[in-house]
Image 1 (spheres, each protein chain N blue to C red):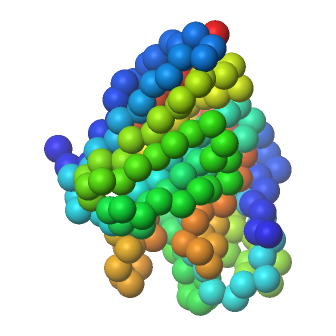
Image 2 (tube, chains in turn red, orange):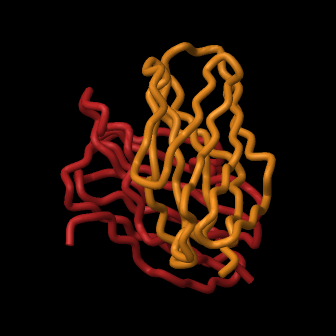
Length: 116
Length: 113
């Protein structure tokens, strides 16, 4: 089915370990983004990309790296995990055309990360 | 900077009745988009409804409608004939001029059978 696929769904890390959350979409969306969701707070933007080869920081980028080598994939890397990065992570994508539908984000199912 | 406030951490409603979820936002822009997203226990984020600020008519999607008061910067969601499947977290979001979404903290909606 078309959509946004995130892997893994669950992950437990020890402090200082590194890992990559994978995100892939098959809708040819130019825009992709990563959010984190913490209890009692709305989603906060970590990084985003408006096309292959282009990335930019969101509201909470520290501790995370991203790259966009293809239109389809937008991995999120934690180089040295910290307990403060325990959260649920969402990848989302959308069009960037001028149509009104371009404003609608399509979300992945989320990845729950626990850092001990 | 824009902010989005959902003042109700939790709401409950009897099945088949109507409930209204509140959302206010702060912006100096005149043209923008507003959204309501639903997050059921499955964690999937699902678009419920959207409103374009330049349109005066309130958006409607089946049992879901909004009361958009631009001058008051208010964007409430009304759910009519509530169903058990409507139980979820509901998030209000504002799209800023950089095309990024600013999110409220969410309202947990409980449906009583």
